[in-house]
Image (cartoon, rainbow, N blue to C red; front, side, top):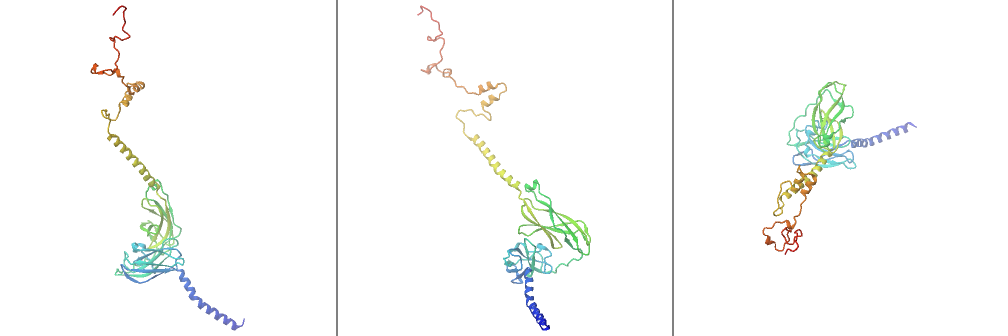
Length: 363
């Protein structure tokens, strides 16, 4: 190829590189999550429109207004420095874009503030945009601490299992096990971690836990921190580990339903109505009217009393307990003449008695 041809090819390649450079920069920027605000300042009671792009498709995002934060440092205080009650959730479309109205609320800590957008499930991604809450206090950011820095070296896991008490509604408990290493220049002594538990799409509830020990620069340590939920908790939970305002790891936790509580209420629904029915039948039995002229015995009837007498044999007791009918001629009459034509038992002095002897020749 002639020198003039080489020059032409070099010029052509340079022109193509200049034309494709903006497109390559746009593609790279599109891969990074971004956040845009309709207004950079607003007062409480109003609302702003938050939009963004470059997120995963069909990803669930949480939008919050957080204090003591700047985009370069993120949110050092975590969700504890955000207005969680006024946050909003949004799902991205098939191209990773979203748009959502957000009410303006004062965060629990002073500004500088940001609108913080982060994924709720799946791979972790977040982005911040500078925002000023009108009328809210503004204070300098806390100084960054130099020295030791901890990093999680292995995957976290939850050790332990539920027992019989957990099956009946006791608080589920596990142990979060992980290994950290000191990647800083100074030792870390008695580090304080934050362990958070989140149910579904709700924000984590953080609890501080201190590990006793010292991790020298370049060394690693295996840590175990207890995790406990409330009584009767069940469903899908996420356990998060935070240190120095930064989330180090997340671990899913599928908590089974306490079926013992369900069984208990089923038994209550069966036993209580049966007991009430028996009590009602006993009340009705005592309150019903008795036959006229009858003898009311308390608790034990005469046949049962005869059967329970110690001196009577079973046959005698059974005979005593069997009611007998009285023959009509053994019924006493107050006035013999009042019987009229009623039958009576024969007597010895009756002239028609077959037992009276007769003599020959007697009248």
